[in-house]
Image 1 (cartoon, rainbow, N blue to C red):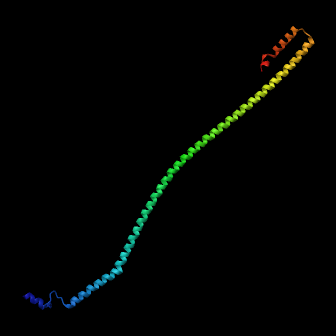
Image 2 (tube, one colour):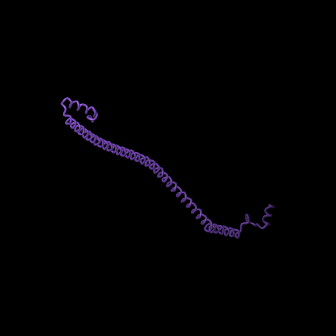
Image 3 (tube, rainbow, N blue to C red):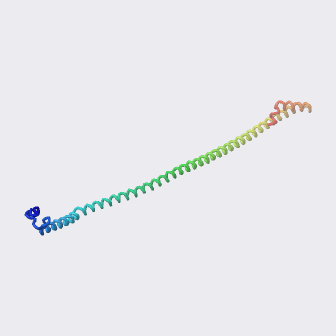
Length: 183
């Protein structure tokens, strides 16, 4: 009991842990002050921090949505670009095919025109040859007439008999040759 006396003598008296009404009141005020301070700091610091974090999360979410949308747009644009590229290749093939067809058509037209021109030239040459042939025939006729006139003059001048006349005609024909009469 000696120890008990020491506690009683130390000023604790009959109280356990030294709880008196003043300490309980101070403890309640301190707890209330701490709760008030926690709520006050919550409104002053924690709520703005939460709002800031919420805004940041929203901003990040918007950026991610924007990035996803831009990625989708980029994929669509790439698909369109690929389609256009394929169409450009098809169009270039079609243009080349069309150009080849036009070139072959133009070639055919040029060849046709050349054939027509050649036919006209041949036709003109044939007409000129015919005219030249007719001129030669006329000249031969003129020569035959002049030869006949000369023969007639010789016949009249010599008053030959018929055998001499036949001989004279044969000689004249030999002088002129067979080629003259054939053309």
